[in-house]
Amino acid sequence: MEETARKAEILVVEDEDNIAIALNYLLTREGYAQTRLATGAGAVEMIRERKPDLVLLDVMLPEVSGYEICQSVRADPDCGLVRILMMTARGSAMERRKGLAMGADGFISKPFELKELREEVRKILSVPRSEVPSPSTEGIADA
Image 1: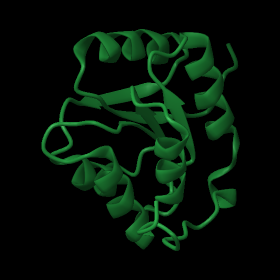
Image 2: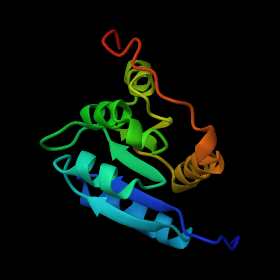
Image 3: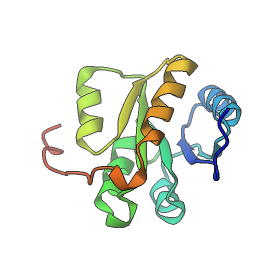
């Protein structure tokens, strides 16, 4: 594994324990620092406070949906460099378009192979933060 000056910080917002355990295993093995929230409540505040390198965000969460969280984060100019990878069991093209239209940097369908997730996380994190495009809210209402 490559040595880096600083571990990438990943916030996992996932309510299903079995998926969170698999994510914990993968992310720990890959050398990432991570924190988990099991509900959407408080996620936006934690993202604003910590500004993690990446948020692995489930779409269907108790209390606040992943879409609402993504939209709130993208509306906050101070969080413009936070990258978001949305995860959902409803992997339709419509769900994917909606997530990307709300500003997600990537979208992965459950169940996913750990290799697939690892590659997607690496791909998103490989883009320097200064190159992350500023989100557009155009078309969100249509998604």
